[in-house]
Image (cartoon, rainbow, N blue to C red; front, side):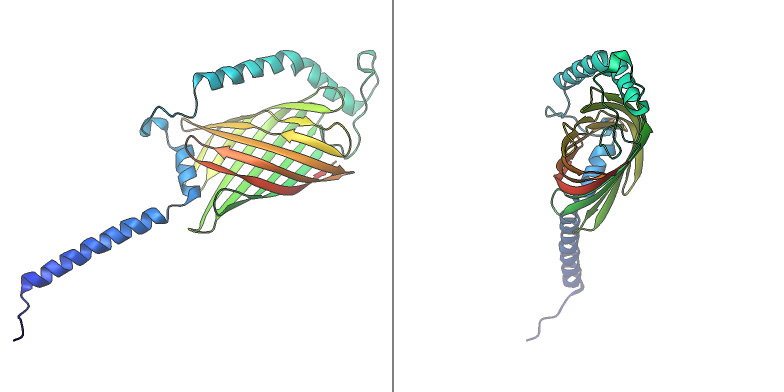
Length: 266
């Protein structure tokens, strides 16, 4: 005997199918959440719109250490370091600067023009192309840095742009510390900008090798973004091979990884 199919049986089957389809869609959406999307949201969403917990990335001890370090560097190097940079580029020998050497063309410190380019293998299947341009004369400089992140699966993109006016301080012939104030922008699914500060520390004891630490701190929509770049340069005349590691962190997300690149200086 053939069993009759009643209308409410058809309705029950459709209802179950809709529920299963909805669950699959929710699962697929969560599975396709991108690292770059998560990072952008965490770095730019106002902290008043997010729940706060006990595991905050920042605390009073972090700020205390940064404040103490900043003021120590400020007192020691601000005035004398800027004057030393000026003396190294204009090079008119003065009694107070007899130990200084004139800046040589192609030297990594206080460049007239410098261009860096790197490829980074970042978190997961995220990779990045980084471009940094710096120009200036003596203690005064300008820096523009653009990092373009791409993610393979799911496909996503994020651009991190930084622009700074630099005060470049030379501590003798082989060490440079800069203060940079400016702005940074994150452009992915949305476009968000904020104030930014950087303090690069460059140590080049000779014309063949150097170590550079380039930290930056950005404040966007009530959120902090940390950027730490530690690299080593292998110099040859006007160019250098660069290797290093870069950490870019919001409160809960990060884009970390090694990089390799080249540098050209005048």
